[in-house]
Figure 1: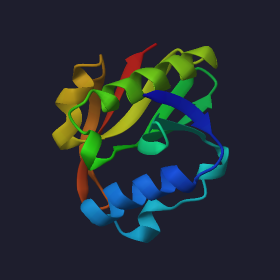
Figure 2: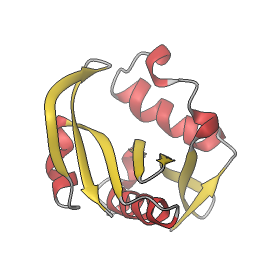
Figure 3: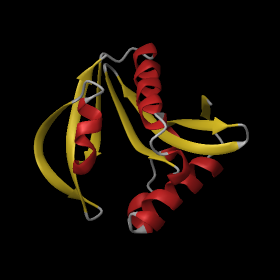
Figure 4: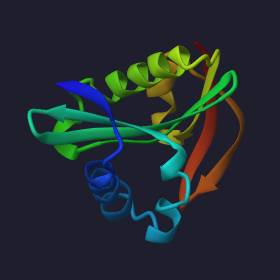
Length: 137
């Protein structure tokens, strides 16, 4: 398994469509935004098969990780953890000292296990309860 940066959004978009739009019912208009062009996209590959993706933003000392998803066939393998840790490492290398993300409430325990702490209220994002989380890098 390798995790690399990609500018070809074909595989990340296919993964996001499968997970967020088809599985989780996120409206297509809410999944696609105008920020993909300014993001760093991570892609996890096993051979030629794309299994996970995340997008990163670095603004000064603050990094953000979003649109994290793992193909159904690769869940429970540690790939989600690897994507988050790789995202943190890449943001730190870009000078970030803190990282934030918007976690689905059902996944907050996963992120807490990676050192993230929840802050602020629970809110609705595309019909799914979310909570902001952050950690130092």
